Length: 119
Image (cartoon, rainbow, N blue to C red; front, top):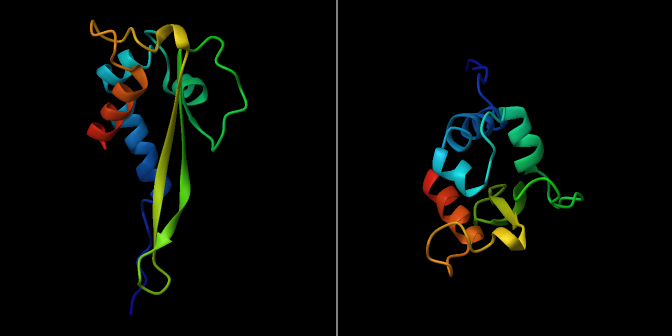
């Protein structure tokens, strides 16, 4: 039996999703109030943060999305578990209901729907 080296890891694939899907999606960036000409490094440092709980208050950013991997549940197969990607969405109260002309649409829910659509 020959060993086949992995060329792409889970982290590599997730970084590609962030780089080519989330960061390139103009609708998601508009919902997240990302300023024009924001670099991808600024995007992941300030707006799309990998952290189970952010310790920074929203000051300059209107929206922040945090994401992390959560322990999964047993699938019934030995040594196999379902793991979850969890997203927490934080929006300043002043921008919570001004994403669309419909003033009862919550920006958090619109961002969550867009992330689900992209994934």
